[in-house]
Length: 151
Image (cartoon, rainbow, N blue to C red; front, side, top):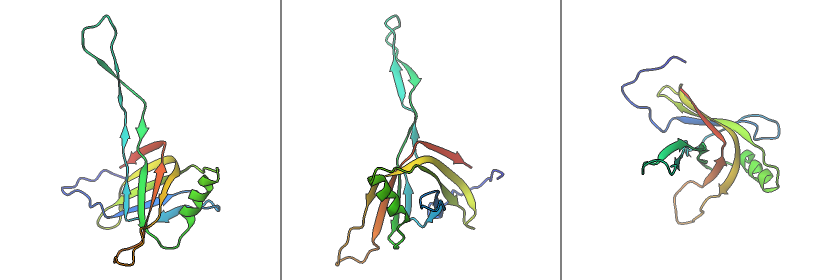
């Protein structure tokens, strides 16, 4: 994909989430999520100083850390992600890869974040209330070991 020069930034509301190998048949599950967050990585510095140096502390790159990815969506009755969580609860953690794709105004791919070795680490069901006029939302948090940007 050739680089695109734009004056205006992309809107954050056009995106798609694809998680591979979640279902038993190995088919990729594409979710209609209302929010995807946690596209972060960090290389924290290790501070180091020898006794022979002055009071200056050196900083050396430490271990790479990838933040958990949080996905939120309205409950639709699709149980593919829930079954994946249940497998992890039963001791069968299935690590998988996936992609979060930012789309442009024409719903064409603008950027993508690929994650690898992701597995469900937390599930939060909806808050139900008979006095509210809201969508029943569920949240899935994925621990990931790698995050790459494809622009």
